[in-house]
Length: 262
Image 1 (cartoon, rainbow, N blue to C red):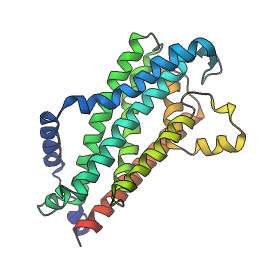
Image 2: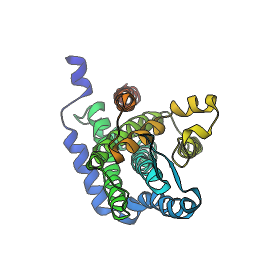
Image 3: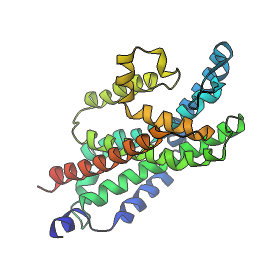
């Protein structure tokens, strides 16, 4: 109990209050800018390339339009982008330049309060992106099942996994050059996680590598929800992000304690 008392003070609300005050005073154009990238991909690829591709095989084995194929994948990408950028660049500035976490942990707040609060703020951004993108999908007629409503909470789970791991990884970085590694990882993961093309176009060895990526699990889960088709892999996709989230939060808490509570 005493060890836990040093980690958690039960005051995550203080971190959230500060975060929302900052959002209220910042430029909202910056906040929502990350939402438009997957929307532009959806319009350009779904209508442009989609006219050439035609239909592809969906998660239930039946053909579906290319627009319906990539839309759930881009929703997963939107949730990832919202969470990862908020939990990496934003956290990096607070940690290395503004020294905000150092100030927070000099109060009664514990590392778990700070980690949970910052990850929750990243989830808020992911939530906004998910709701907005689902609205775009509905307007385009891509949503065909009531299960699609579950895409928003699942997007939050995806965002939680990426936010927790993103914040934990950022705690190890000390320069802007190191932060560029995040983009180096994210772009190939976006391109090769079966977001824009079916996974079976790749060689078997490449497919195994893709299936180890977190975004692939999010993409496949979103596709299943979009048409209400589930299987044994549904539980695997959910379990992947649950483990990823728990491990990320735990590691992030340990790192904050090691950095600021020596």
